[in-house]
Length: 319
Image (tube, rainbow, N blue to C red; front, side, top):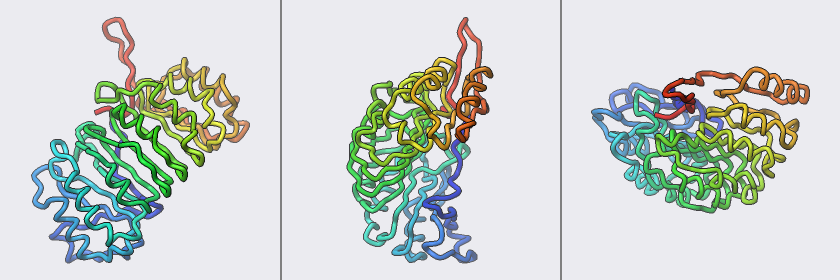
C-alpha cells in the first residue's frame, strides 16, 4: 500500500495546481508568493509536455516572486526521467531569485507508482539553486544524489520504495550545516533499496549535521538494525523528533531502542506501521508518555504472511 500522496503544502504555503491550457483563461491565479506552484503534465497520453506547461507558467506568473515549485507528473514518467525538466528549471533560475523550495516527482499511484517513477541526477538542482531551503524528491529508479555541499538547505526529503545505497551513502557524506530535517524512505530490496546499516551510520553519528533536529529513517527492510543503532547514536540526543516508521520493525528492534539511551527528551517518536507486540508498545507508553513524548505506535496496514514455513513482513511503501 502506497502512502505517497500529493503534497498539500511546501515551504509553509498551500500547493496550488497551475491550470492546464484550456482552464488557464478561466482561472484566477493567486499572488505568486502566496502559494507553492504545482506544475504538471499527464503521465499517460499527454497532450502537453511538462516543459510546455512550465513555459506557460513562466509567462503567466511573476516568477521573481515565486517561493516554491512542486514538479508533478511528467509525460511517460514510468519510462522517462526528468532531465528536460531539470534543464528547464536551471535555464530559468535567474528568473527565480526568490525560490526557496523545490520538490521533484509529486505523483500519486494512479499517476505513477512510486517504484515506477524514473528519476535522474538531482545534483545540478542542488548546485544550481544555492538559496534553496527545502528540497524533496520522490522515486528511486535511477536516482542519483551525488555528495554535495549546501549552506542554506534546512530540509531534505527522499521518498522511495527503494533508495539506492549509493544515494544513501552520498547523502551521509554531504556537508549540510543548516539541515534541520532529514527524511529518507529507504525502501525494500525488492524495489532497489539495497542499503545496509553501514550506509546510514554516518547519519546517526551526526558529525556532518550539526543542526539536525528531525530525523526520519523509515520504510526500511532493516528497520530493526536501524532502531538498534539509534539506541546508541550520538545524533539522537539532540533530536526533537525521531521517525522509524513504515518499516519492518519488530520487538527485536523495539526492545533495543527502548533499552538504549534515554528518549524522554524527544517531542515525538513515530513508529507507526510496525510489527511490535502489545506488551512492548505498553512499555513504550509507560516510559515515554509521562515525559510528554508524543508516540505513534499504530500498526496501520502492516501485513504478515505465513508462507513456505516463514513469516513475511512488508514495508509500507514498496511498489
